[in-house]
Length: 122
Ligand SMILES: [Zn+2]
Image 1 (cartoon, rainbow, N blue to C red):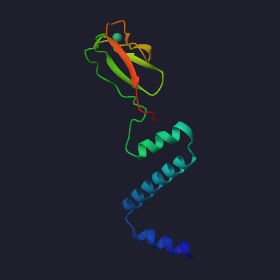
Image 2: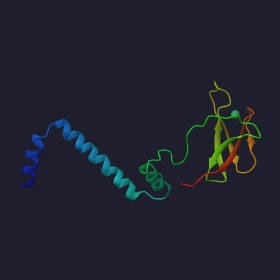
Image 3: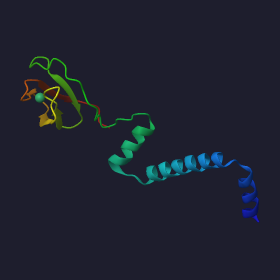
Image 4: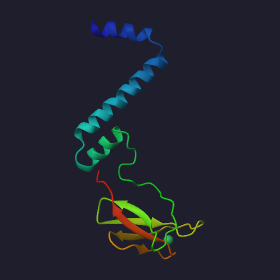
């Protein structure tokens, strides 16, 4: 009986409206389901994104500053070390990866200096 009533209601709704409604409903269900079952860092990442922080692990590309030893490029990290990549030349087709540790600044092969500083943990 209920299915007959539902079928009658659905037949009266334009198809494109029904499609959009079920699509947004299923997305919300998947998001809610994932958030409830996620744990650890994955859950923290989802919570940060839900709060509006689209880049919770700060994985964006930074433009280099002067990069001298006295004025190094500042790299934030919540950990004692972080893997960074330097595109040493503008036309370079590869990235020069190196580990950066908190403390003294470190010089890349291209001459730019980088320094790891404390960042607020997630
Ligand atoms: Zn470099």
